[in-house]
Amino acid sequence: MAPVLLAVAHGSRDPAARTATRALLRLVRSLRPELTVRCGFLDLAQPALAAALAHLSGAQPILVPLLLGTGYHVRVDLPAALATADLPPTHLAPALGPHPLLAEALADRLAEAGAPADAPVVLAGAGSSDPSALADTARMAELLATRLGRPVAPAHLSAAEPTPHQAVAALQAAGHPAVALAPYLLSPGFFARRAATTPARWSGAPLGAHPAVARLVLHRYDQAHAATRLAAAA
View 1 (cartoon, one colour):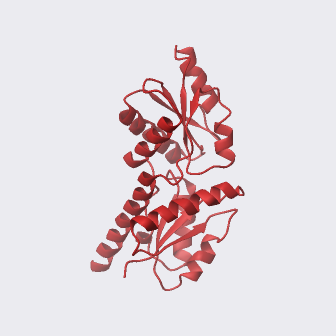
View 2 (cartoon, rainbow, N blue to C red):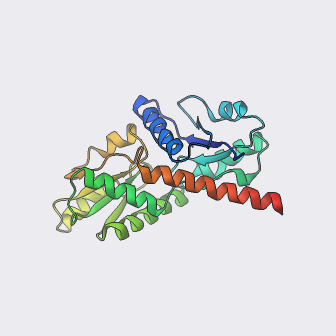
View 3 (spheres, one colour):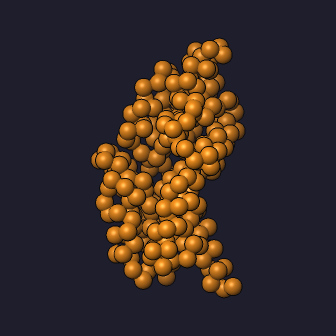
């Protein structure tokens, strides 16, 4: 049998964030009904990751981070959780982003918000003090710019600059009065509300249960599953 897909979400006090995570995983299950899909949270929601791993004791799950960049959680917290559960490093999939499938989802969210095809875009990531996470957001901005065929400026909702407000203002000062904002976030919550306060004329919704995101979750799972098989055969 294929290993369980254990999705690992950040967690939030906002019930809408948990609802969005459940909706995304329902979509993942619908794409691959034969696969067992479970979820654990790093913080602020239940089940906690440790409890989810304990419940799957002996099942050798593949952990798929529902995280958009390779920050501290992916580099430190999740490998530590694997070690505690006596699982090899190959059982951790890469972070979801950056990836062209996310550019597909972001472009759709902008279109749903009514953003025209010629409006420059600010990509608003959650932000981090981790340079690798900031680099991932910058790379995602490049992928989205390629997808849209117009400029995309990366910005950060915490811990780094430019902020979305600064990035929108810079584009306006450069002669673009109508700017679109693409929240580079998986779910509603604190950061999504902060992103909504910018003076951008159009603002997309968080990625949520978008089909491209669901396909990406399965792609990351498949990558890690292939790595585990190679390691077992070595």
